[in-house]
Amino acid sequence: MSEHESTYVPKTGIEKWLDARLPVIRFGADYMSLPTPRNLNYWWTFGAILMVCLMVQIITGVVLAMHYTPNVEMAFASVERIMRDVPGGWLIRYVHANGASMFFIAVYIHMLRGLYYGSYKAPREIIWILGCLIFFLMIATAFLGYVLPWGQMSFWGAEVITNLIGAIPIIGEPVLIWLRGGPAIDNATLNRFFSLHYLLPFVILGVVVLHLWALHTAGQNNPVGVLIPKDRTAKDTLPFHPYYTVKDGVALILFMMMFAFFVFFMPNALGHADNYIPANPLQTPAHIVPEWYMLPFYAILRAIPDKFGGVVAMFAAIGILFVLPWLDTSKVRSMRYRPTMKVFFILFVLGGMGLGWCGAQLPDAPVIGTFKTFVLIDGDLNTYLWLTRLLTLYYFAFFLVIMPIVGLRETPLPVPASVSEPVLSGGATPAAAMAQAEKKG
Image: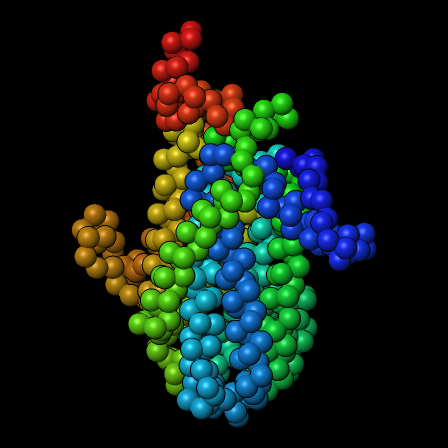
């Protein structure tokens, strides 16, 4: 697929003139005719959804920047003015605010799909690494944007997160001063955050182009996880258009319906009520929390009693994703054919959700309900902290212990020789593949 030859033929004089100087039409036509594995399911539609989400965020962000005032005395009021006085401002702001959540919903599903089907394995390591870089930039951009409304949660969230940088030995304090623009969070900080929040989406767009370039070069993975031989390309692939453009379009419509539901009916459901209170450095909120999509990493940060250790663990939770291609020792890509690893993967997903839930709780909240019934906890241990530590331990163990050991010791189910074999042999399930293999044996 990476050596797909161009089939585009310019027809008009303008097309011929442009094709000889800047072949953008040829590039688009070639991409539409790119041979794509014929067995891709709807989990593969989130790449297109993410591209739409990025463009929505950039467009709405540029419009909001035209009316926003990055000044601590006027930032909160300028956001309210956008909501009340700018024509359509309420819609643009709600689309941008909820668009961040939709973006992270799609990216988490996209990454979990890649993890389940082994899309990070050779020769797609660069695709995965670039995707992790996009994820990291998204987190940074979202945090910077969370500060801009200059509400209570914005100010105190910035206070907590920037203070973490100061915990880094030697370089922490100078970097903290540079980032804040002074010893405390003030007008210089807000200006820096606004500039970076405006810049980073375009950086993300550039990395996305590299991500697509790497994908075009290495070729797409598929649910079976087998490479498509050159002599079977016609049999195992379909043109990207119209087959997958239509499929992506259907998934995008359904996703946008969910997006619109939040924008028009529950616009503040994914935010925090305290952010509608103007920032007050003299009044600390009862519970300082980031947006929901950062809660798992916030929980990992709080799980470590040492401040610097928590910072290291939080960044390590993201950094470990970059080296994932070298931690998985299994020769089988898709967990569809790895029953043991599939169980650990399900536990990993549940653990991630559990970390998000723990991150939203008060650190000293008492354990209640079912959890207290099954776990013996006494005195000062009667908190969500120990559940957070247990889930944090599993998070790192999944990558550093479970994935390498299970990859060496488990016996995977028989993997089809090609993309089309499961269908042509009369069954696409692992059980059918095993039965077919036993029949041949």
